[in-house]
Image (cartoon, rainbow, N blue to C red; front, side, top):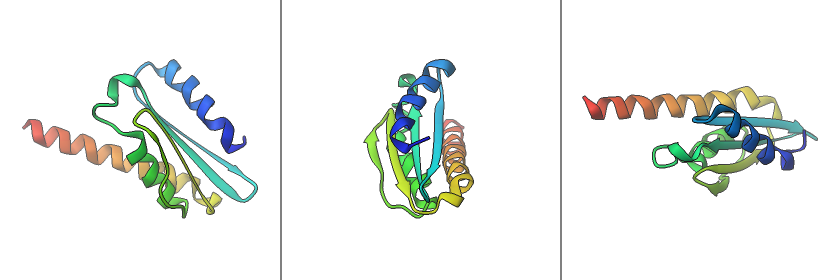
Length: 104
């Protein structure tokens, strides 16, 4: 799937899950594109731009941008799609641990 179509896919997935974070990665023409979507109820605690930057780094890219509820990035290392997803998952786990510690 071309990277330009990922945003609409992420929007559809956000509607299906109701509440949460979705991440989709596309590999095409030797490059990778990544989109992170955050449902509206979580944007005060989770920032899609921050998360997509972790994924972009794993893909050999820099930056990424968008809004708190939807962000996109890319990179040249299309073979690192799994690493990009793992980087975002680790960032979410770290944030959850920090939040739990703050509540203790």
